[in-house]
Image: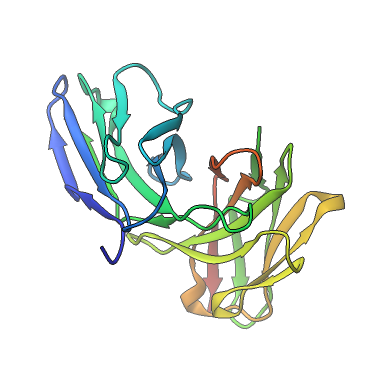
Length: 117
Length: 114
């Protein structure tokens, strides 16, 4: 697609429910990243993929959070048994493979605003 | 592991005066460095990037940044601030050659005074 697409744009859920957030990266982009951004804070790294392989999940807060990218394109971030503290903007980004070893910039989606009530 | 520190959470300048947003990084390898801007209720937009070519990097909207390895800094500057520059600015680092993990600073809110 023309840009990184995230859905839904807004999600309100009750505490204890599971939610799935979707990210559709730019076509052909190798790397896909998930970030969480609380109000007034910078994006906090959660996890990233190269193709379908999850390279680093050190930023996932606990085992309620998981992500997958089974075919190396669309990714889903799943939060089980949501809690109020999970409320934040969840941002996805994608980037091309490196150019001559250099990291290429990440392009961000508009984000999913998650509110847990 | 890489990290980035933005030294000021808020910066206020008058319209027409210079802007300086400070960023220091830590990297075990040769870093790639970026500045992103986020306007209120908007997404993240790339301003400029450094990936080992020229140390002085020019970006959009008149911004530029200089990579100084000896000082581990990548400060963002603009000669003359405009009201439309009011936004949140993020310094970002990636360990080029190590992995593709990219880390954001906590951000600097730039306020432009009329």
